[in-house]
Length: 352
Image (cartoon, rainbow, N blue to C red; front, side, top):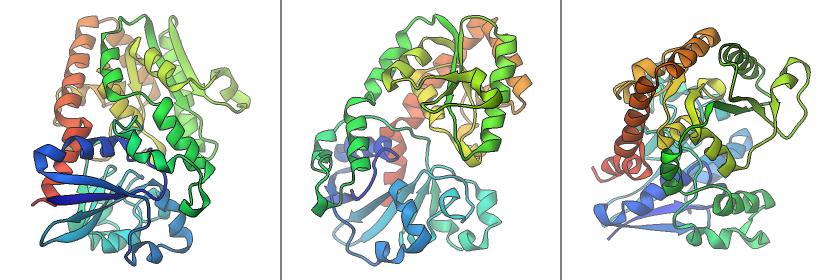
């Protein structure tokens, strides 16, 4: 039988969504999905030295094994196609793997980057994801305990604890689709201390939306740390994950804005999974994959804060239209962007 091995040597929250997909596709594609708690026995990780090495934590590294064909591949959720460390690709990995599956896929940026362009044939776009409880979390239990010989740090311990007990299952998010909305809007985003431009844009969106939608809203930065200056007026506590999802599910409209470096935020997958009607920024990466879906051209079309606020207000006045967006987004997630379907596209390349 064919085997796909996941090398579990660091954090897993960035690839937990995809790991669910690999588990659920085993019968359909006739392979065994295994986890190895060790570094792969190749020159791959030895070649990732210096500044590159600290960015391995967010990469999903896998090996495909069949009777006649063995190779490595990876999943990368990091940002756009610049080769500047964590803003793009891990070039030492890109040089070795057969396939480099990229969530933030930008063909124009690849064409304009000579260091990346020569590998363009092995770079393949994949759908969005977000951290989620792994259905087979018991298989990752040995990694929960911070044992020195296995190199499990306290940070990894905390991450796995969160995945087990704080992050809900996908089935829970789908059940939340049935909640009757009581809020007009729940729009809470993290504050990044190292992202001045991003924080400023989000502040302007908060302000514009608050001016338009004056009642029954929760809007601001969810942060454990003190915010200063003008940002303080939008300071909110950090919500526990299940509370966050319940508030989001209980709002009539959702807003989407891009993540750092104009990347695809994990919020996109969350909002689609919840089946929310969305008003938001244009999507920079994977455009071909996204804009073929129903109503995406209408929902993800607004980059100016005032325009986002206007569209949110207008959609609140037309609940039938919002319901159409919600139904289409839930269907898009279930038929195109679920973990099982997203990973099935990866598998089609592996078994090709």
